[in-house]
Image (tube, rainbow, N blue to C red; front, side, top):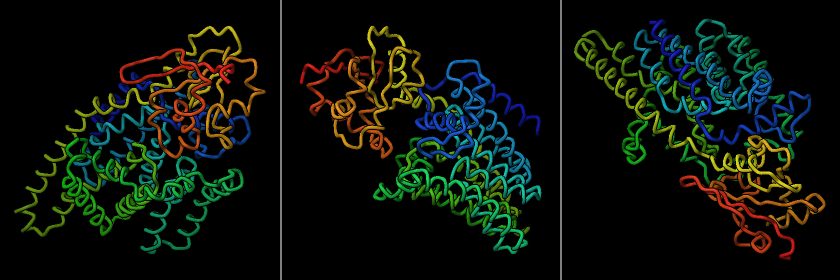
Amino acid sequence: MDCIVIAGIFLVTGMLLSNINYYSFPSGDFIPYVDEGRAFVSGSLPPLLNNAPIYSVAIVLLGKLIPYQYPELIAGIILNIALFAIGIWMVWKIAEQWFGRVGLVVFCYLLLHPLSYHVVLNPLNIVAFSTAFLTTIYLRMKGRSAAAYALAGISYWIRPEAVALLLAMGAIDLIRNVQKKQTLKYLILASLPMILWEISVAFHNEGGNIYAAESLALRSEIPNGYFLNFTFSNLIVTEQFLQNPWLLGALLAYIIAGVVFFILDKNREKQLLSLYTLVYFAIHLFFPGKGDRYTFPLLMPAAVLSVWPLELSLKLNKKIQKKLGMGIRLLFILFSIGVVLNNKTQIQPFLSARKEYRGEYRMIADWITQQLFQRPTVIVTFNPGGVQYFTNNNSVEIFRIEDHIDQCDTITCVIFNNWQYFNNKDILLIYDSFTQKSDTIYDNRHGVKLFKNMEHSQDKKYFRFMQMLESEDRWVKIYRFNISSS
């Protein structure tokens, strides 16, 4: 069976490597990863401690070994592919030990799920976190509790949701009276990375922890209905679940039954998986983030928890098991095969729908790269970091407008407040269809409203329309600043 699993991993790994450049533009978190990673590698702190440091540093260091354009981007995806291969192997070894050959269903579910391909082909730290979580479970199964606690603690420097893993591990071990003194020691030591990071964030960031600030600012959107709906509609990827609350409710009840069943199980690792799932789910239910990626760490627990009818059939007394056991197992296997095959057919539609997401910024970068500017030129655009990363034109500067928006409601105000910088330069304002639709707290904090208001404010009289770029349903408008209009 191991040979079949390894063959499947190699096949999918090869396919992923051949699609490294699948997405036009990476996730919005990628540029902060690069900026913060470069700062850490250079021996300094970034202006804002936003993302935990391990993944950012890893892609910057690995990028130094890649002699191609956009090295950190390629490094992030290659790292994700390698970590996914390791993680999916861990899934198999865990599921095999718990369920025998039926564990192959859990492996195939994750291997052929569209969301797996989406997060792996984006430079996102969620893959590294998921692999660390799976490795922690595996280490505990092998009786290496100290190593498991250490890895769970270090995982906080990958993603803050590692606190869910630490809380679940500590709770299970303390409730079950597993060497309480040793458990407390492990728990305290494993909490040190979290404590050190949060102290650093509190002293370095003016507003403290950015995630806490977002939750407070968007408390009206809590509980996070988007996360709830997206999670359950993507366990089985089909539009019917998005449109039918009864199907979502039935799936929710099925998974809750699995959580309860495994919490009551005597196996500590199954209890840990169940409790971790609840804590992780609760964290994101009360955090207003809308990223698809947050669901990924729940796929493996959901697949494992779905096996509860099979486990139940084995615990029935011999008479009932003889009458119902075989039927339950057959129904479960048929249902599981149907889910896996359904998800497999959704891989291409799922990825295609996201392929050009934020593609406007790549259109902007490509246009800037192709221009021959005769005078010193400054580009004012939303997401300047992303545009700068993909721009290969040394004759132009990209203005980071988010650093200058505190005192202004218009782009013109920003320009006049920084006139010493802009004077004697051509100023081009670039507005696009993605920015027009952006409305998250992150976007607002970086000045998206200034761009949205430009066509309805005093900006309009200072900017002259130059050119429009179009591709399918995406557009980019380019304006030139004209001081004579004043």
